[in-house]
Length: 471
Image (cartoon, rainbow, N blue to C red):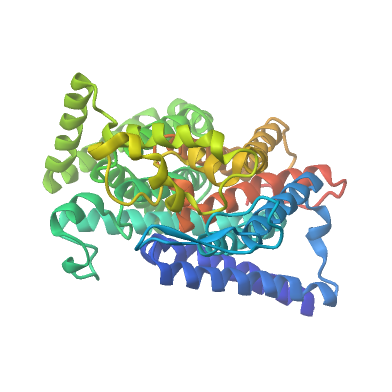
């Protein structure tokens, strides 16, 4: 009984952190990252505390491949951190040498940046394993599903209200925090950078869409059904009102994916039985959305797309971002097998941009190309390990979806496609931006991957758990 209580407590703590992470400025500020780290550490400590009381439970069923790769990532990252070669002083752009544990072995170029990155990533990997265990139980999958969908809807609603009110900043922050001109163009909801907001919303959009489909497929109380319809409308409005062009394109692709994949059967069945009702409903919702969008105004969004068309004509669409990516690619051979160290991109990047002269300026904390930045920080070996975590989990999710389940039909047919669509969306977004460097997005991606890995672990463990027919 004690073990089960501790396990439940750790899981509820993770759900609370899924709400906290995006609302605390997207966990982009240092204090928010620190609190998120503390929360994850507490949740994982409580789960480990259950083991002496007989709470090993689902940890026995965790995939061995996943455990091996996580262990290898932690070993590589912590070795690079503990064997750091220097401490970087950004004020004077100087590396102060450190003795390290073994001077002949590879180490991070900056111990402070590597330490901060490894603390965060170690806890995120712990959250992945915790979710992997939770994903084997249908009731906890449902709780994760609902939490993600409602949290995303709340962030979308905040962003829409801010745009409708023409807010110059995030509601509870003073305009002086950043320059008003650049700030008014870049923030959305709780995120300072609209592309981060777009990436987060696109992680939650498939879950919310699947929840709406689930509500339509069941005898859902009218008030609850209305809540899910409002959530779907909120995501649609947020996708339009947010000025991230990549986010808008991916959101549109995810919406089409939902219609062509999990919604196809339900829409076809409903169209056959109640085509007039469905047509009127869809038409009404579309009309209301258009009216709201026109009332709020699309001047900024239209201006962004006009700028995109102009840049396409002049060949300068990516501008300095493409220059930065080329500089990052030129540094990949120097990163080698082990990389420059976790989180050390901003310390080494200025040394690879000299050839660009004044065509690129400012401080680049992230590269706007997650895959290249991963190669720089983790090298070939670390990038291969992270690829197994991400793309291996995605592949196992696809394989599991193609294996019909006897029970838990709504989760297999709705939640699992939503998870796969969300992961595909963030994988595409990572080609042109840095969503995987943001703590809140890292946590959500880890939870999705944990569901993929844990779902498979349940199927292949040889232990058949009871599932509700529809949960």
